[in-house]
Length: 425
Figure 1 (spheres, one colour):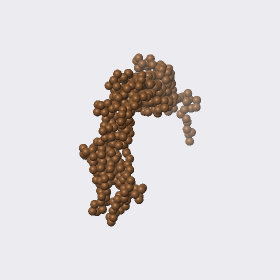
Figure 2 (cartoon, rainbow, N blue to C red):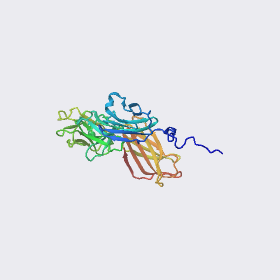
Figure 3 (tube, rainbow, N blue to C red):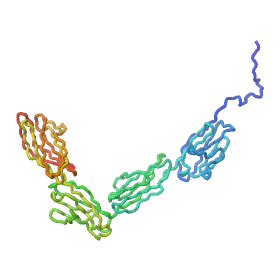
Figure 4 (tube, rainbow, N blue to C red):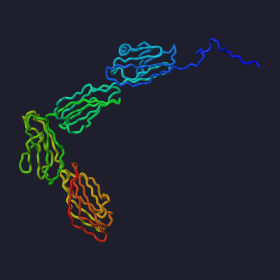
């Protein structure tokens, strides 16, 4: 047998020729990096290639749209001033001379099919905040906060009325508007910006004072005839001295005396006290500055509604029909017509049970006095508490009957007991 002979003797000059080795694709060995920098800082992005070839080209793209550099050549016209490149056969170093809104984003380095992506972010800053130092009550307050950073910062606003008050969120965005500003909206307004670069939020604050004008402390005061003493109060903005405030009802001035007491304005508050509310007291009251008051608009005024919720229902009688079903009758007075009522019962021996609704009705009437009659149907034998809730547009009054209304098909009676009530607003 003839021994095999190598085609390539050991001393052949072609031994070790790289052209005979398989092709190794190029590889970018620089890891992707995110840079978080302050405005106007500079940064250098690197792109190092392994297994490059003479025909390859290193290309830098911005946001994967614009070719910034191909090898050592810049392709973005005047914006080339923001950049410079240190190009070599196997590497490229792209320097951004000034980080700003035009240069932040993603930078892609390509070499054939190889790719690395660097991100350049800008630290968040609150560049300016604007609001008027003072504004008159009832006007529109405009707040503005100019921020910068990348990614785009989220902007929120908070109001702190005084040093001990909590911060209350009032809106989002660089610009917010507060229509019909009130005295409660005086205080410190803070604009806070955050762009989620693992940085702490950045804030700036400004003081705003709501001045002049007059406002109701509580625009609606719930009361009913015979409900006792109520206070109607208005407050006003800072003045050189406490102004003279007068109270009116039906365009007539309300003076101190009898059941009415007007106090001198002090600490930015003026109140009218009404003792033992009567039906004629219910309605709209106006507080306003007397004319020629210093630092105040003579026409400034505010209104307070003394509502007139229904008077406590009066239980007139309990009767029984032929089937021994209890029938209850109430009389209800209301400054404004009733809108609805509800009757519900609960068996006394089973205190853990829920109330059972016997009636839930809407009333359509112009009457200020109603007679409500309700039979308690389909109840098993026992003793029941009965609750009546009547309502007008301002609120409701509730009567809880402790009359121990008895249901007994063989015998029936009403055991006298105490009545009590409470108001629910």
